[in-house]
Amino acid sequence: MNIMQQKAIERLSAKSSQLAQASVDYSRPVYVLSPEVIMYDVQDVMNMTGYSKKTVLKLFSDPELPKLRIGKKTVVEAHALIAYCATTHDKDEVDFWRDM
Image (cartoon, rainbow, N blue to C red; front, top):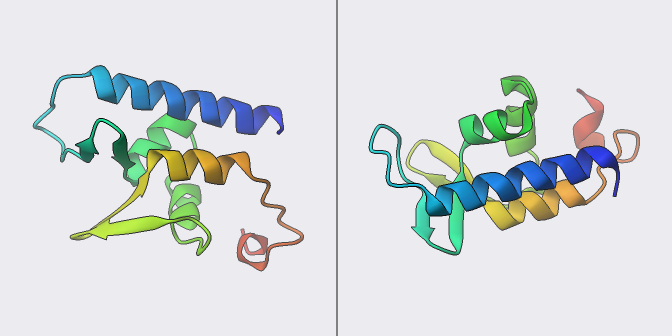
């Protein structure tokens, strides 16, 4: 695991623990289905990782990322995002990321 993957996992883990402890914010939709199931949308992933919107949208359109459509929003479960970030996705080997 490289340093970027470790930092992404640390950010995601910190964010999930903050969301579990935080009170409900009614200005945004709540994606906490239970204390163990936390969902992130595109904006959440952008804030946690610091990636651009284009990169996060490309990530969400990757067929290997397990995601869920809730209405018009696409969300990803926290543990699935951590597992996805922990695996290596080489641009030269995976056709999906070659276009970026």
